[in-house]
Length: 239
Image (tube, rainbow, N blue to C red; front, side, top):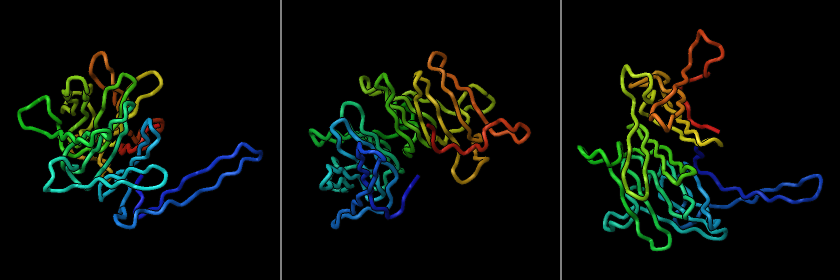
């Protein structure tokens, strides 16, 4: 879910009964106000990271630090339109941009590493539009793109691609990945499909369950003749 020009809200909980909850409004920084918050993630140190269409914001509970693209600085983030963000278990920040690939930010050093799709390099990103980020229990980073699902091993810096193959029901149902989720049993679920067209090009979208052992997918698609099928092929969130 995206929120145009939103304030942030910080909830406070009290142990008294009945439970009282109140919200504090957190206003955007005056020198670099955000436009549209596309996602947020909290790191192991408690800091909050915001993905916005004006860059990345780190919030420590009092003030913001703004990370933005500077064409004269190769160590800046690759793009200001950020689609998703992930603070992983070690504190590394993964930044998914709209058209300029994936960035890895080390907050301790300030070093930013850029990952891009490189033609004829099967170990690179499959596509530079990043739409979803998730770290599984094994420490693997899963990246949803407009070119399928990517598995990234931080130890080897190698991307493994999973994409839709026409005529293969065991492949990903659609290359427009919108959500990636790992359940309690370690199963990876992938939501796909264009948010604008249920019958998206390159497959009908739908929900996918990934089999790690075989590298194949079980797809769940809407079928108007089956009332117990998934209600829509546009899957934007999984919980």
